Structure formats: structure tokens, C-alpha cells
Figure 1 (tube, rainbow, N blue to C red):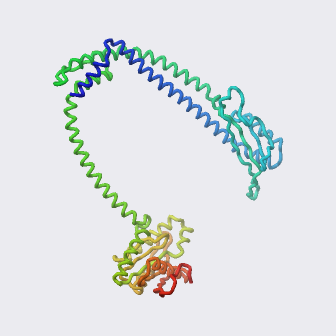
Figure 2 (tube, rainbow, N blue to C red):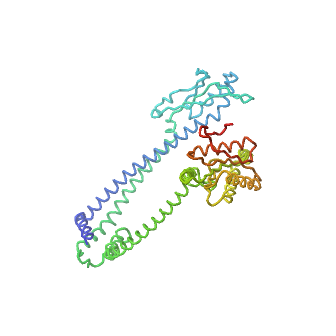
Figure 3 (cartoon, rainbow, N blue to C red):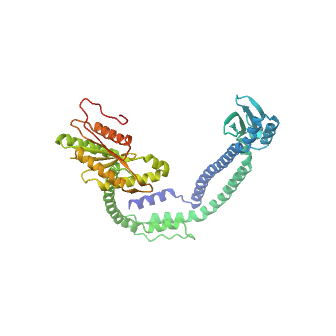
Length: 450
């Protein structure tokens, strides 16, 4: 009801007594807006045309390097001034070039032609000079390069204005003609097709009972179908739409509640996926180094508290670099995936397996002493040796083993296993090496130590 009263009040206050005055006002407002937009679009079109011509000019100047650099380089290398002058004279005939100069490697001018500051003529007084400098390098038959100087092309943006001048004139004339024609069209259409229907709508709104919406339907007498007829239809169906809007709003609220519940479920599922992804190596599907660090810290804490043994095994494929060098990194990734799958199928359910980095894999074996861990590593070594990996066939692997000593840090444990793995590499590969507990006064072994 309030909406209808507001609409009726706007029309009653805004519509003048004479349709002709309203039509004239609408024509002035609409045509004034059109003129503003037309001026802006015309200016933008002219700017785009100028920028396109300017960019073509820049590209033409840059393309001169491919055309003239070989000749200039040959003339400078042979100290042939006549040929060099001929090249510059031919280049100066190109419309995009207003000047060219050639410098030696010390920056001294050898040859020059034309102007360095752009064309000073009245037709080009609005342009902006610009230059492009290209190095001159001679390459002998042995591939050695000798910088022998440079050459610079001088040009001016005003050339772009000259190139698009006729286009700009056409744009201006076209915009002016369209403005005049549209003024007459606005004048006829608004006076004959807008003023009279608006008067009918004004009379209808003055008669309608805003409290009961009991007025007869509004009929526009003007010929044709336009937005004013649609406005009349909208007024006639307003009551039905208002009644239906409450039902639609209630249904929309139910849909929004269902969508919100679904969205929360998807967010929770996505959060779980992201948490799993944060602890997974994307190539092999095993735990990544971050997860292994967490698992090692937790396993070491439990082992130190309970006194149970904890073994750590580091293993990698022998001579893996040769796989990448000979077959490419794609085959190398396939080998790592197959190696990871082989280890995953062979380890115990209580062990933790992950990719430590590169081609190195870590296996945490809780409640496992050095003898049992050595047996596990030897079994893995034999299984790898007897399995054909993708594209490369059977390969060997090496394993370094260390067990957690009382009071030892995880960094020391990893360093000892890594040192044992290095001893495998140093002693011929395809081996299992174990690192005994360190003496209390001994330093932690490092990779590369004897």
C-alpha cells in the first residue's frame, strides 16, 4: 500500500499540466546526457586510434633492428663509411624515422643523419620525440662476440597523429551527424509517444484507491508496445505480486538455511582434505617431511618415557642421479613412486613411512631394536633388488639404521642414520649399515665423516 501511495505521489507532483512541456523537458535531459556520452566516447575513440597508431609506430621503429642491424654491423666492422652512409640514407626515407646516428664502442659518433629531437615542423609540434638504441656486436666464425658500437633511431609521436588524421576527421563528422539526427528522433518520439501515455498513467494514479486497490485496470491508448505499456501492466498486477512476494520470501529463507547447512558440511570436508594434504607428499602419497618430524618427535618422547627401543631407517635408490640424467625427471618420478609403493607394501602396520626428501625415505620402527631393524632393512633391500622398476629395470638401494640412545635428541638420531647411509654409499652401495650408540663423550657423526 505504501509503495503504491508513493508512486502515485511522485507522478502527481512530477507531471506538469501540459504534456508538451514534459516532453520538452525529457528531450532536453535525454539529449543532454547523450551529448555528454557521445563527446566522451568520441574522445575515447580518438584516443584509442591515436594510441594504436603510436604503438604501430613504436613497433615499426623496433623492427628496424632486424632489418638494418646486420648491414650496419658489417659496414662498421669493415670500416666502410660509404656503405654505412647509404644504409642511414635509406633508413631516413622511412616515414617513422626522423634521424639516425651511429656510435662506436667508445660512444663517439661515426655517422648521423636527420634530427635527434624529432621533426620540428608545425604539423608535428604536438608530438613527443623518442629514441631506440640497438647494440652492434660482431660475431666471428669461432662464435666470439665483439661489441663495436651502437646505433640509435630517433622518431616522434607526431608521425602517428599524421597517420590517423583522416580517421580522426571521420570520427568527428560521424559523431556530429549522429547527434543532429538523434535530436530530431528524440523530439518526435518523446512528444508523440511519451507525453500522452504519461498523462493517462497520471490520471489513473489519481483515481486509484490506495487502501483497497479496487481501481479498474489501466489501459494505455497509445499505439505500439513499449515500456509505458509494461508500466501499466506492472501497476495492474502489483497486488498479485505483493501477495506472492511474501510466499517467495518464506521459500527463499528455507532455501538459504539448507544452502548454509550444505556449505558448512563442504567447508568441514574441505578442511579435512587440506589437513591431510599438509602432511602428504604429493608425488608418492607418503607422509612428507613435516609429518615425519612430528611423528619422530612423538615416537622419541614415548620411547624415552617407556624405555622401549626406537629404530630409524633411512634408505634411497642407489645412483638415482643417473636415472634422471639418462631417462629424464619424469621417469625418475615414476621410479620414486614405484619405490615408495614397494616400501609401503613391505613395512609393518605399526611403522611410519614417509619421504624424507629427494630420493631419501624414512621408516620409523617403534619397539624395534638394532638387530630387528637391520633385518627389516635387509629384507627391504632384497625385495627392491628383485623388483623391476618402471623404465629402468631392477635397481639397488642402501639403508642406514640407528636406534635411539637414552637421552639422545632426534636430530642426533637422524644424523647417525644419515651417516650410516653415507657409509653404504662409500662402501659400494646396495648395503645395510647400522650406527651403534654414540659414546657419551663422542661427537655426533655427520655425513661425509670417515
